[in-house]
Image (tube, rainbow, N blue to C red; front, top):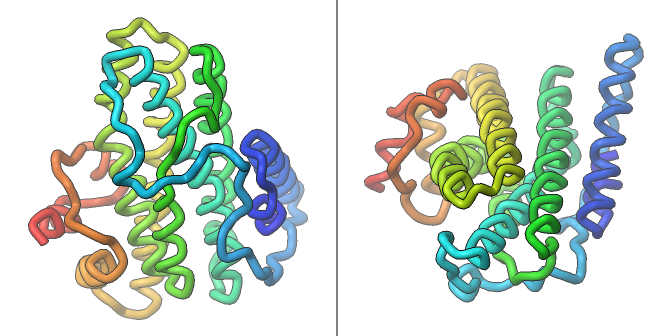
Length: 262
């Protein structure tokens, strides 16, 4: 199932397939007949649509968020992030199928993939309401780098993707909601509020399973987190931090503040 999603190129097709597989997974769990956890060979990079054009982060045009064009660019950037998140959550299941994990691990990441699929669809709907579409603008080519860098390190993947990159979403989303609220864009405000509420859970899944694996190997989670982020994440973490939501997701300040000055 995971590899099928990763091998599907079209954004809306990928997310429809993702949601269908998630529904199948949870129906089987509720029926008491859980699907077997197999082994898979996921692609090094997920299939992608022909558009958007992927550029070096430094080459992606900057637009003022206060303008209609700027708001479209912001929605497009969020859609791109959400589509990458769909692949990241299915990839963690396929990539690390050799690591024995409780069924709850699969439940959490299938749920996260399902929610990210919903988020991508919401952003696409907002783009189309604004007269645009996903693929109309160039996008960030570096989104998959964290996956490539941590392809052989489950603890590293958990540290960098949910506990750094998705936690960053908790920091910046309230500001984005404010931009669209000021513009009277009700659909975008509602979509971003849904994303904001559900992303807390995804960060929490990362923290939970990171601590679980540290416990299994009798390692200090904070020490391991600092070491892995400095190994795999390129650059210091940038404040301001949403300390309240990060705490709600199981990320205490002594995990990330020391890395802001690294």
